Image 1 (spheres, helix red, strand yellow):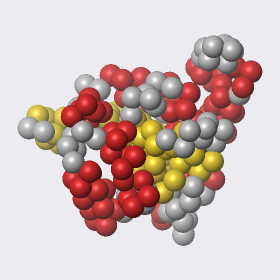
Image 2 (tube, rainbow, N blue to C red):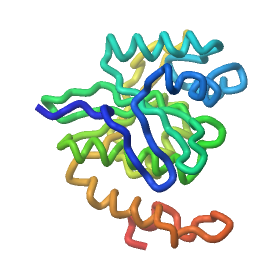
Image 3 (cartoon, helix red, strand yellow):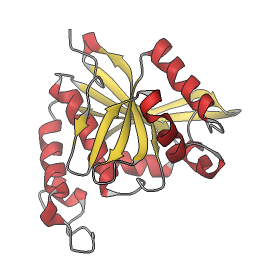
Length: 216
């Protein structure tokens, strides 16, 4: 039996991911992703927004208890500031499969190098534990989430039509995955993209991630 992911901190050059401990992380996490100012984070998710810290705490506690979510809190390495979160969900240890979901990136994390590194750390952790499949799912109207999955290297698998009713509206769900045989090449591309020499002094990337996946 493979162990569940998300039980230990994950260290990167730019970010550190820590298993959620509400007493330690709650205030900073709510500041990053909660409240009316962050309503856009939750637009396409089946849950949220969360207007009070207690509501976010109760939701994450319930999902840990009922669905075995393992939520990782994302901190900036240099600042220690909490920037967002993402959860391992639908963890099926006997089958070697897990999903990343409830990806809630605060304003300082969105579309950043730190965000890509956080996703890379979470994927690498799963495959290091011997998992065979890593999933990403999103609303078919969420163009930004689909672009993010494809940029990272997830393969499009199809659409579950009328998959759920979300906030009173029918949702089609797009499925993506990475499997274990694909991960070494994707990891190599991510390592090259995240390398210090791929960024100019002003932080601009020299080569896009897709170019490293395609061998430049």
